[in-house]
Amino acid sequence: MSEQVLVGSYLLERLRQLGLKSVFGVPGGALVTTYGPGELSALCGIAGSYCEYVPVLHIVGYPSLDIQEEHKIVHHSLGHGNFTEFHDMSKKISCATTVLMDSKSAASEIDRVLNEMLSLSLPGYIGVPTDVCYTPIPASSLRTPLNIDLPRNETETERKAIANIRKLLEASTKPIIIIDGGATRHDVLTEVTDLCKVTKLPYFTNPWGKGCVTEENPRFGGLYVGLGSKADIREAVESSDCVLWIGKLSSDFNTAEFTESVKLEAVIEFQRFWMSIGEKRIDLKMKWLLQNLVSDLEKAPLKMKNAWSSMPCTPYTSLEPRPSGKLTQASRYSSLFVLNNGGYTVERMIHGLRESYNDVPNWKYGELLDGFGVGYKTKSYKIHTCQEWDDLLKDKEFNEASVPQLVDIQLDMLDAPATMVAIGKAINEKNAKK
Image (cartoon, rainbow, N blue to C red; front, side):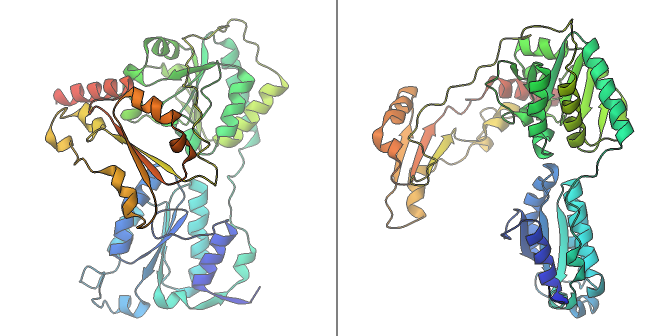
């Protein structure tokens, strides 16, 4: 390795060490934007990454040091010679930020932001002035690996927590597991799958956790979303005396407007950096805690004499996938499906069921593909009925997918799952009382 490296090259080499092969112009694994308008356009995506716990690095090309220090008025700025406003905006939706105003501290600042970004699994922000980008600095820091792993839990604290969890499970009569969105966001799906397998407990998901674990297991009970749940699911969850709740996210839509009714004293909650038993919160990272909990239960299976021996509710059944020409093969083109309900159905459920502000213009979606490649053959279909849908799935030409194709599925504007209808009703009724 050369003894010196440019600041910009140092940053890119750190990203390469993390396994990144591409840097985008929109929020992805890492993105680069211009100062001002470019970064402002990306803020919505960065904010989404923040609330979804996605470690995205936002790199912003800044004006040179002399322009900033002399408060010159330049394009892309707010026109008053102050260059800190946009950085201040990003601070609210980033776990760590820096603008590299001094090449001497550039390496340590880059490493600090990347380490915090990886540890907290949240976006980071690095501003790089144009002249600093090309300033040579020592390359020696590149030999020190970034901290990409979560620190391990304190052994004795974790041991006591596992013993307590075992004790509560074995004393319970209606134990269950609930998997929510945090299980996906914090990369514990393997641990969750193992936990469901080793405990053999009934398990459920919340809306944000739907699809993150298999729904084909006979122990899967379905979707719990407060008042929006099926009656037998509500009864099973809300009567449980021991709930292992993984990655819980108590938002309005995830709880049918905060209508969950699970006894707090029955909840053992697992989050990225902590877990809780009832109201007692303990600093234990759930990834390591779940791994060691599973290991402990594998070595000494649970002894639950009084726990239910069958599913507490009707087993959830999912649709059996139908053959569709193996569209995922590389030799096949993409098939796009437009669920065309004429507007914002979710918003209709909440407010303005038939108001025009929830309508969207009805495009000729089938012709969109032609606009992406003049001279290329494409095909489109419009579906109005279940029979037309069944016929399409049997259509040989459609299943061969020899050209890009789009299916415009015409839906009623109020076609929504029962859970969504219930959530919308709860929100609408709450708003009406204000």
